[in-house]
Length: 485
Image (cartoon, rainbow, N blue to C red; front, side, top):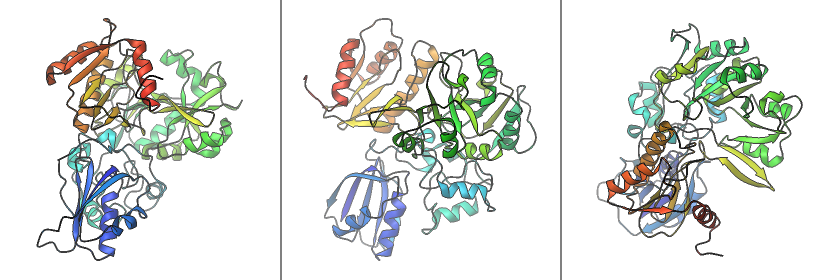
């Protein structure tokens, strides 16, 4: 039979799980990515899917599946993972997920990945920020630039290894690397992450490149100096802390807030701050945004830091998007720069959430939670370029509306360029070819030019939508209403 599976089934160890189950049962067949779905051809009955649902990897989620009575081709022996197809796009685009405990142990152990900030496995690591297109395979990610070494290739092919068919597998021998440079771009000798931690403890202000962009970093005893340097008098800073015990040292999170803080998505969570947290973290407010390490670099950094908390805020020129490229970061004039040579394909700020009456509200939906979608029975494809402030765009295809990562406030050329890149990327991943392009009615909005260019590219109808009606319609769709109430 043929099973077509839809959901979060790429980049999460789903195909290796199918392989292990089939081989354990002595079945013949194949499994492959196909666009955004997974197709399983197997000599089994309906009971196979019941068994598979009981073995799903932690990050996998099956939304639906269809079964067809299609016999296996002649000549298939055993079960195998085969080359991906491209017939469909855009359902379960994998998101970035915090480095798992097993990979953390490996980074801190005595094996060949000791101290390797790029250690991940099928259950964790960067996904969306590295992706060029679907289906999710190494050759369509930034890791295509790093051929596997012999040891990594062996793990990749081993069905019993937790990196079996892990698309971004690497090690210090074959993967990306970090370097630390000073304000003149000169290399600072020594272990880059350890030296960065030591200099932060000495009171320096640094910038560190992460998965979806760059962070400005300083220990929390240097908050006022950081505000003076960055010119940010009042706006709150996000604080990354070593572990859960440190969260409790500086704040009073509810049980729900703590679950969000420790979730694999690792958002910044607004929590009630204690007097132990310096007032300069969020002047005049009783809350502070706190989050835990989520990349290998963050974990190794806190292994070396004496301080148990540090500012980690998006590195950008005020009014511009977070900086991605190494050559652009020196205009911020920090003391030092911790940079890696892995290309960031999709920029993504940290997500920010707030709890209210047991519900989670996004103040900024980005890394770890995007691309997100909602089901909506729209006939055909469409695209909307969003407002001017707190900007995101959306694309609609195959009965779903997908939303981009947080873009920013869209007055500057840099933000509009970011909007274009993010939306074009999302249209490519989802296969959206809009017949309608929507833009705000306000004639002064900078993203209207982009909307018209997309409409011209696809021969689409370009429509104007009144701003407050767009708010109303968005609330209706988000609440599941298709008609006025």
